[in-house]
Amino acid sequence: MEKATFGAGCFWGVEVTFRNVEGVVDAAVGYLGGSTENPTYEDVCTQTTGHAEVVEVEFDPDKVSYDKLLDVFWDCHDPTTLNRQGPDVGTQYRSAIFFHSPEQQAAAVASKERQDASGRFPSKIVTEITPTSTFYRAEEYHQRYLEKRGQASCHVR
Image (cartoon, rainbow, N blue to C red; front, side, top):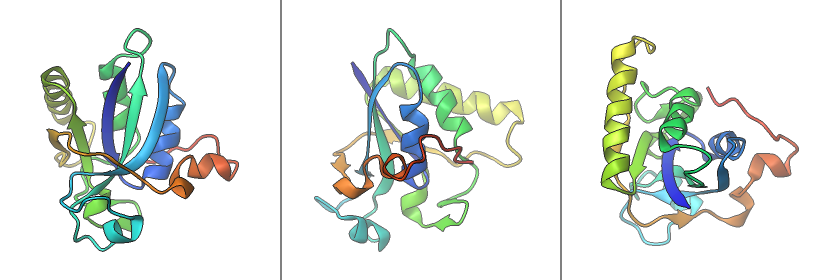
């Protein structure tokens, strides 16, 4: 099993999107990329911790490739809006790929370049690509949030 971590706005819909990908074994929502240890949702919402809302995806690389997960990432949000996804505004909603290996970094950079060159998006992509750091799992009420409310699928963008 391997891990991939993505920030694409509010983590609830992003989690559902990745859970619906064949080959994804698990997905957990949490916080990554900041300086505060063990941040809470309330901490992250202050925009003072530096964390992004993220989904940590555990996947079977024999069933789904990292490149396929990158395609899902680009499809599920608007990577051209800085610190914003739809009505959600703040640094915690930034578009980000947190890589776990040099191979993931290279794949993410190449994928971003392809997306930018494709003309698919009306503006330049602002997605950050940075090494992963400590993943802090979000509070339990955030895990499978939409699923608990009867929403088994979600199109984020």
